[in-house]
Image (spheres, rainbow, N blue to C red):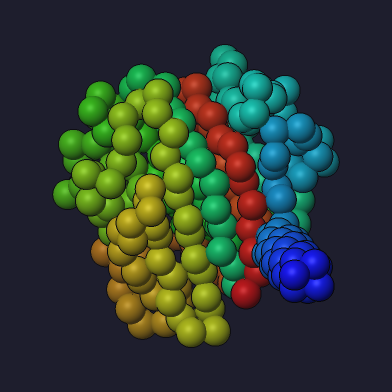
Length: 244
C-alpha cells in the first residue's frame, strides 16, 4: 500500500512539474512574441520626450509644443505656423496615434511632408487627416463633410459617427502603402475609407480639391510625419509608426 501511495505521489508531482514547465514555456513564448511586436514599431512619442520632433524648416522644437502628462500638447501663441514634423522620413508605413481636441478646435496629421524653402508650410506638400471638433467648428459644415475629423482633408469624408466629441481621445491609424498604391484610415477601431496614394485616381482627387495646381502637394512618396498648428489647443499621445 505504501508503495502504491508513493508511486501516486511521484506521478502527481511529475504532472505538476510538467504543467508548471509548460506554463512557463508559454509565458516565455508570449513575452518573446510581444517583444517582437514592440520592436516592429518605432515610438515617436511615449509621453516622456519630444526628441523625435522638430519645427518644420527648423532644427529645434517650437516652445508651443509641450508634454502634458502622457500627452503632447499644443498651446497656440500670437504667431502661427508652429507646425512640427518627425525627424525621420517614411515611405510605406502604418502610423498609430491618439488625438484629443479642445472645443471648437482644429488641427491635422500630415504625411509625405517635403522640406524646401519654397514650401513655407507643411500642408503645401503633405496630405492631411483632419483633426476637428465636429460639433462646433465651422469647417465641419462645409465641403460635403470632407473637412470633418478623420477625413482626408478636402478629398474624402470620414463617417462622423466614428468620431468622439471634443475633449475625448480618438485613435487614428493611417496606413500608406505605395507599393500597392493603397492607403486606409481607421478611426476608433473601424475602417473609415481607403484611397490610392498616387497615379490617375489620386491625381483626379487632387484636381477636384482645393489643392488643384499646387506644385508639390502629394507628390513626395518619402517624407516626414507632421502635426499642425491651427491656432487651437490639441493633444496627441501614443504616437508610433511601423515601416512596411
